[in-house]
Image (cartoon, rainbow, N blue to C red):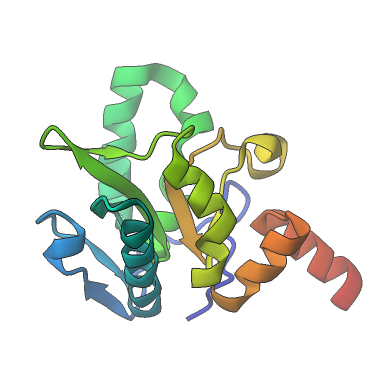
Length: 187
C-alpha cells in the first residue's frame, strides 16, 4: 500500500479504485456503523482513539472511513442540494476524496445520542494537532494552507501516511508541499 498516495483536485483516483486490504472497523469504534479502513490505518487509528480517550475520558468514534466512488457521488450530490456550490471548497469531489483510499478518517464523539465531528476549538483538536503524527496521521486541510490544499479547514479529518507524518509535522508541511519538496531536492 502506498501510504503517501496524493489524492486531490490534480491527482484523481480511478472510479473503480478499491484498496486491496480493507478491514471492517469494530463497531465499538464506530457506534455500530459499518465502516471499513485500510488495515494499518485502522490499527493506528485505534491506538490514537484509545490515547485520546485516556487523555479526555470521553468516547471517540470513527465517523467515516473508506467510501467508494459511488457513495462519494451520492454524498456530494446530497450536500450540493443542501449547501450549494461552496461544497467544492469544503469537501473533495468524487475521485478527489482520500476516503476512497481507505486511509482517511473523520473523528467525532457522541453528544445527546448523536455522533458529531470534533469542534475546531476543542481541547481534543488541540491534542490531535499536537499528537496525531505519533500515530502516522496528519491534518490534511489545515487553516493556513487553503491555497495549497484547495480546501477549507476540516479539523476532524485525519489522513494516515505512516512514518512520514513526523516529517510533515516537524516542517509544517501539507502532503502537497511534501511532494514539491521531495521532487525539488531528491529527484
